[in-house]
Length: 273
Image (cartoon, rainbow, N blue to C red; front, side):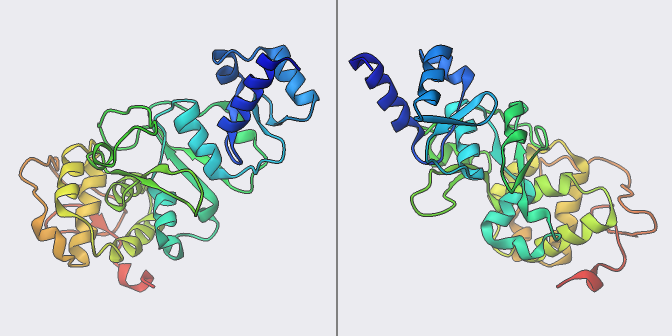
């Protein structure tokens, strides 16, 4: 192999590291022709865990490497949010059995098709933009903590030596979870999680509520926080938060919350751990 191609290969292997992947689109954009990639595969430098995507031979296929590859390599403003973000932050024992292996992704664009075809134990669930109207931008390594914090996001490392991922903070993850509640079982889950949210930041909660488009998510979030008498709730600025008008019947035959006008199951206490 010539010096030029050898240098290109070394740059690519360095870019990939142990857990990252690159798509055919990325390779073409960075000057790696289809024939050159085929040569790398034939020589044993690269492997293709799914059509249209590559990783280095001997690399480890892991969900977090997939997410970081989407965020950094593919330039997609997708973040880990909702249910799985809360799992990462230690609340998996509150979640339904079997759901901890589903990585919930939010963003303005759907992940590429190869993501769902990877031979991983975990599966990915794309839940769209979510309830917030905040602008999305690519999550490059240059994005600061303060910029992310202003959107209810943060860098998160799954383990030592792993690349940091962009994930929802607990405040944003709870709002995203509340947005997806559609039946009593999901209310029980959200309620159990809200019980553990004793240290949410009221200013961040207020900011996210102002940018939340879902009346249901806002009312449910606040009603559950009120139900558990969290001290931070009294300090959340609600002056500019639109909570809509009229009653919201979330579950049939439920009990109407007197302040936030949303029905909650009457047997919530029976489902708390």
